[in-house]
Image (cartoon, rainbow, N blue to C red):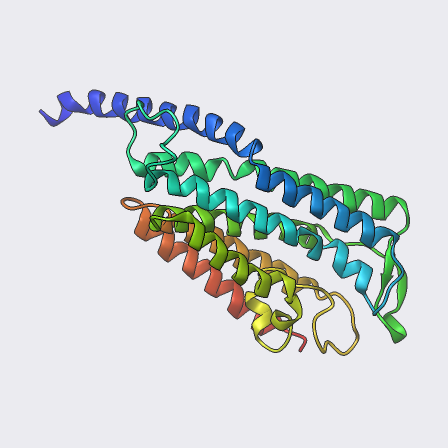
Length: 281
């Protein structure tokens, strides 16, 4: 009997998988039309333009303002969009997309998580533009003393951090949206927390807390030679990747929630520990 049912089970899984992919396309187009995302993206582009043209008020200002601080408005935009997207399971005012489709809440959550490729790609394109233009123009000022240079450019690992930060915030927004009944208070509280995570970023870029910063700046805190420390950047990217997986798991209610949460937490912790091990501070 088990053998007889296996083709039916396999066919059912393929049908549901195809439905999730189709819904993910719909969710992606909807994400592309989110006003909050475009406001955040335009503001981030404006910050990049301002940083590129401004004279420095402090050491390394332009280097840090271009990457990763310029992405701060985008994190707010994707958080608002993520909460509202995830909250459609709980809100009577915003019913799920394709409500008639025979998909459970977790299948719909996967489709919404997949739609985060839209804002992540937008940020990745902006960071790629920064990387290309800065290399064409010969780089920017960085460092002091013996490490001072006018030709500093951001590494691929630094350029990847803003996209990962946006993915973390987007996945967290979807997880929170699925948890709460009213999205308004959750959005307000989240925006306040994002202000402390990005608006006052310097609080998170000293001592040991730099390992868990949403937007880690380089050079770090009291690093003696005032230079970029690439191993820390690499392991911080690993930490952010773990946080993405963790929040993806928290967005679900059934399988594979536990493995994703445990795996994401393990990767994030490994990233933190690795940063402390290689730390120049």
